Length: 248
Image (cartoon, rainbow, N blue to C red; front, side):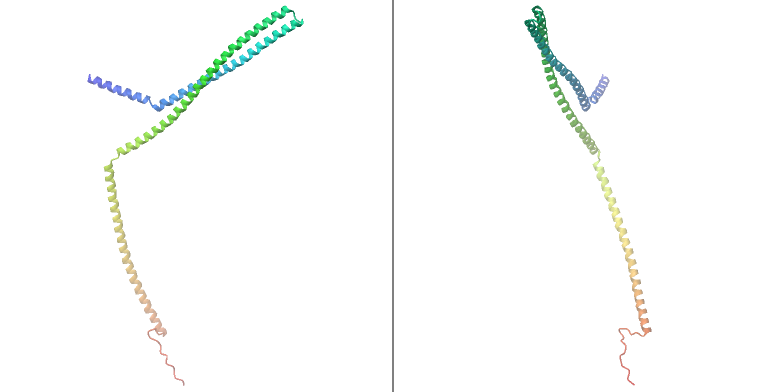
């Protein structure tokens, strides 16, 4: 029994998971908007058809009324001709009666067409209201869908970031940073040590060069003095005698 219960629970969980995947709110909303747009297209076609019937009914009213007026005018003309003696009274009465019958028929047709026109125009007004409501609903759903998509994008990004932060080993990261700091300190000390050695080497070389320069300067000074003595020039420390030679 326990095994069967476990199997049932597993199947139930998988069924719920499948339902959750099917009931993606974004996909459902998009499908709902598509269905409403199809309904809107059908409503617009129906509205156009009903409007056309209302227009035809209005035209029929005008046509039947015009015919009724025409038959009445013809009945009057027939009676006038009979009164003038241009037509026999019997024929005039018979034809005028037929014309008045036609007038009544067209008057009745005009009244019926006017009733149809009123019904169609009422339907047009109702359908127009429904279409406006449907358009408003579609616009509202589309705005909500955009907001929903934005929220899903933000929530997924936030979830990813939080998941990454949750998976970070803070202690391991700190230890790694400490090891890096220690290594950098060792490298910096080693670089400073090499710098001091280089400076010491440069100081010895400078002393040697300075000593050599002093010896060369002294040698040059001695050579200059020797040359002066050879030429018979007196040095500033030993001025020449200025005693005049006695005149002969």
